[in-house]
Length: 260
Image 1 (cartoon, one colour):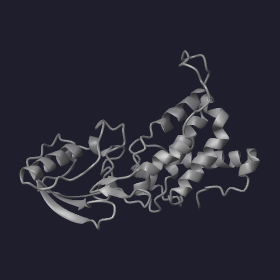
Image 2 (cartoon, one colour; image 1 turned 60 degrees about the horizontal axis):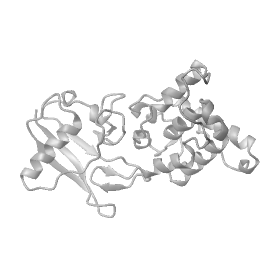
Image 3 (cartoon, one colour; image 1 turned 60 degrees about the vertical axis):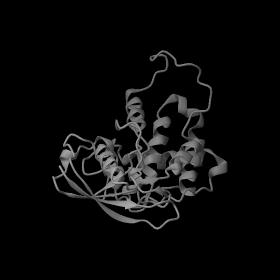
Image 4 (cartoon, one colour; image 1 turned 90 degrees about the horizontal axis):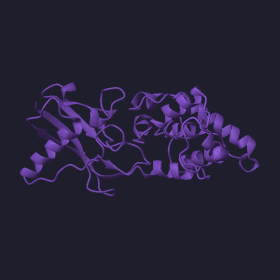
């Protein structure tokens, strides 16, 4: 298989970027999209050209590093599939494919297809953790957790922090990511002691990073490679309002409720 690739090239954060066209040949149908980019870079290096910079790590769909817009879609055309798990057999031989980095103000381009997603890390640092002493791992049945809560916690814990929800949202909102992290710990007994503080601080950090608000486009849920439901945004709003009502120091804080 052979493809024409239109790829965003940008030397650094301050440089003006632009699209460049490349030809990649001898692509095997079973290759992943990232393996195809590896092949492109091998062919570029053989010609003495600069390879294309892109992020990758596990290549198993669990780390979230493969942050690519492929033909205008986060992670490409397959639903609930990361770019590293997207096979080239899902493209037509000879097709022209456009590859871009995440497009969101809080995700500045570092080089080519690599963006700085540190804003998501800072949201986690603001409260997406448990700091109270929980001791060593207990026997699984010692702490009773209702099945509903366990299922919700497990579903939200699948968020890999890739940022596809932000890139797909017309407003560049990080509410699905933040909602998943807040809901995950809110449904576990270990997360209860810091429940109010967590909701407030993570939402405040999300706003401070410059992410947009939610206006119910639902593109975030469509782009999420783990299929996390947009309904968790409503859970986050409830957690925020609950926290504001319970904590006098936060009563003046504006809630992040999605607009109708």
